[in-house]
Amino acid sequence: RAVAADVLRRWRNAEEAFVFCEGKAGTGKSMLAQYIIAIVEAAGDVVINVASIGHAALQLPHRATAHSVFAIPVDDAPELFSNLSVRSAAALHIARAPIIQWDEWPR
Image (tube, rainbow, N blue to C red):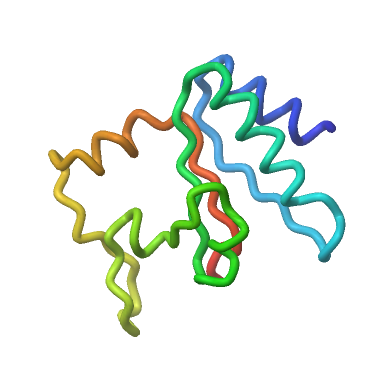
């Protein structure tokens, strides 16, 4: 509850933050994400939902990988970069999102 309250408070106040939620399977991480997404989208805001791997993406509402949403090449490059054009419709959609929920953050 405390994490959800903190994230939603930051969203309502338009505060920038990076919130990392880690826990073992079955501890409610996905439920927490779904709760936050439901509230934010019900208010009319955009939430970008992505996962690092395809299997995790299948659990998400829009079933998208970070590679597809952010146009990240799938290779062994030491640095992450995007091929997304700054003025593209996809980039503008991402820029409008007050929350980006990334499941299975790469280590």
